[in-house]
Amino acid sequence: MKIIKYFVFLFVSFQHILSMSAAGQCNEVVFTDNFSSSSSWTTIGSEVSIGAGKCNFVNAYDGSYNKIYKSVGSVLSDTYFKAEFDLSITSPNPSGNGSGHDLLCLTAGTLDWENYDASMSYQVTNQDGIQVNLGSPGGVSDNNINNWVFGIGAKKGTVVQSSSATIPASSLIKNYYLRLERLSKGKTQLSIFSDSARTVSLPGSPVIFTIDSTITGLNTIQHGVHTGGNSARMLNATLDNDAICDNNNRNEITEYSYFADCKIYPNPTNTNFIIETNFLQKQLLQIMDMNGRLVLNQVIQTTKSLIDVSNFVSGIYNISISGEEGFVNKKLVIIR
Image (cartoon, rainbow, N blue to C red; front, side, top):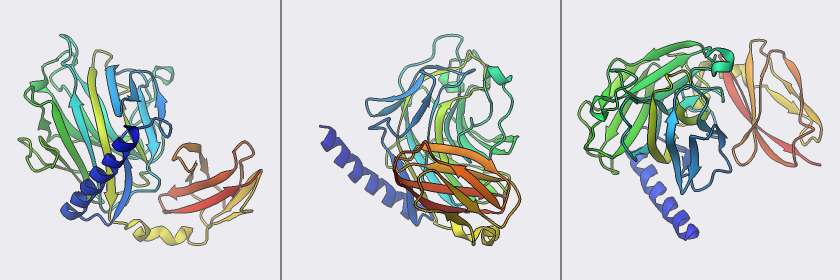
């Protein structure tokens, strides 16, 4: 049955991706996942997890780390991408519990979308991102889903933006089909549909939101609660069928030439390697294994950096180096 489900997913994903490409400006499929396995996802907390082929929010309360995340395998285009996923509300909230959840976050790294947890006094994380949220703007205790809304958030470093235009949820709808698009460097759009073919729009959909045009380096997908939110906000729901495509325009970042001569050596290696770039500003180094798991995340700020990989197992790793000046992707081979 698992094999049949996998091939059905491949077929559905192919059709889904074709519709994504036809509807927008997608030239390359970047990421798909149907939550058939949790092995390539990192899970923090116990209230958001993967099981039974879904991402499950089970009494998922705000106020602490409860999320899953995974590398999308590359840096998304800054000029156009499209991200889609399905949401099902599995049960209504009890009286006194509203919602305020980060359904989808595309971030420039694995830090929380907006906040650290209570151990760091809920300080705002320093990381770019674009987000889709579901919340109860009428108050933390408003459990009436007819008062809940979907919105867009954006974040440049520590500066957070939230869309004033939102799309209402409804108690008459259990299954929602969401689409987030970055239409240009400074413009995003959220569309929500009541059918899986994404042809019947909800009232108020789509909404367009102007964002900081310098938001860049998005390479990680996250689903979870709002860590800095009130602990009265909770959600019971499932997510499914993540799919992201873009216009394969990543190399057209104006400053890409800064990284044109980036070198990594020795390659293959077994203990460490050196990264040489020609730029002195802060750069984010991320190393992912072939399963998409993030195994190293650090900031470098020198033209020559020695990176220790002595604890890594043999294999081929994806290296991403990004910053305001652009980005580059490399392959590293480790042999024991």
